[in-house]
Amino acid sequence: MSGVGWGTGSPTFLSTQPRGLLAYSGSPEKWLLKSVCVHSEWVTPAALLHPLLLPKIYPPLFNLYALYNEKDDDRYWKRIRLWNKQSNLALMSYLGVDK
Image (cartoon, rainbow, N blue to C red):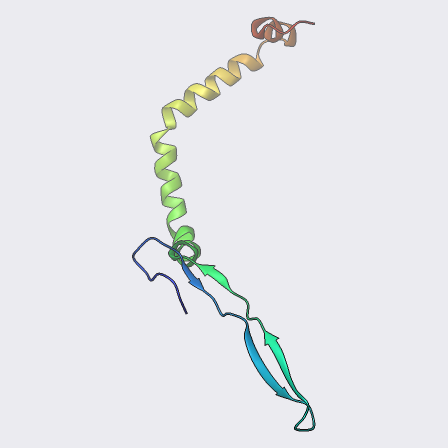
């Protein structure tokens, strides 16, 4: 393995380079050199921790976000209800849309 370890913020790259492999195929004259390439992938601390942590902390974080923005949300829905009472022509003229 090569790469940077934990705590540095850099991803760790697990890599296995292609290696030559001698394979015997029947007689001593028939040794074959085969190339074997093993799958390599990036492993980051986030990739390991997100599936474990996010399902547990998402609901409380969403509740905190909703409580923090409750006043803005109420104003938004009040405005939407007001605009829904208007006719299409009134909305088009307010928005400056030509017929």
